[in-house]
Length: 379
Image: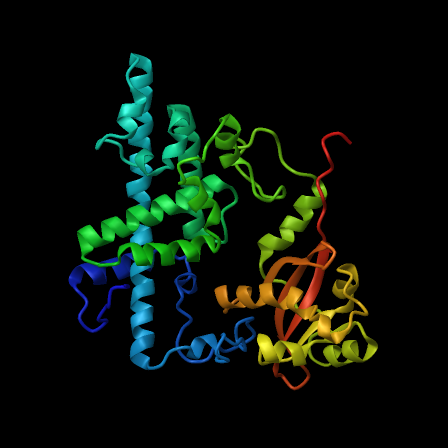
């Protein structure tokens, strides 16, 4: 059961933790389930988004008191995460030094890993302990430093499994420290909440902690291989090299985050009349968004969705991911993602917020580019 936090009776330690969290500007409170106060204003993708009960996320609280509780909880989690950064990084440096000393002296590294003296290495999956040398841990320390920077500059998602695991170490150390030193009373329930916010999908992390995980050297090396071939990672982690130019070009679209609306004002009505845009507002309003939603015909054609009957509900393929993106980043003006067709086609698209000729909020799913497949090694 989640602890009940009284926002009107915060301890000095809890207030200090909240203030500490404000320094972590790259972590938005929406990651931890807080969607703000009154309705979102301006051109943003979350302005007219519905939750599963048909309400705006910004209004998804039974009372102002419930909203305040959610705000305080999210602030405490962010503060716990901020406090964990020096703890984890210093602990990793200590572990690297200890393991290197033992390796030089012919000592038992495995005994250290399972001892009370271990700082962070004991948090890593036990099934991989045979791989935890000082060199391996140095690579993981580089990852942890990158994750710490991402949390400050703008957290999006982990690029490799090692990045996800580093985020877990920060979260777990943060919760432990917040409970022990600040009386935050966050506990395991809010550790899970933090991990879902940071990773969205935690299945790979859970599997790594199973007793049968980690067979063979390849499993450990795979920690540092990017999930997306177009991801940019430190060459120290991925010496095999970076992806093709086409993939890098598409990545630039992903990193810019703010993609302009192509059909602003009166141009939207003309595009709908000419068939350049397809109106999917009736479907969107039943499941996802209150405001008008249109998709470029180019997107529909590239995904093989053109001409499908209405009962095929092909709109789900475009709207479901867009809906989650709007929930996670409600104040952004655009959210780009990979859309999938029924036949396995993949396409880079963006959900873009804008206004029509009446200055009313609208959303458009716009084409960015084709997903470039990596050629087979034998080609």
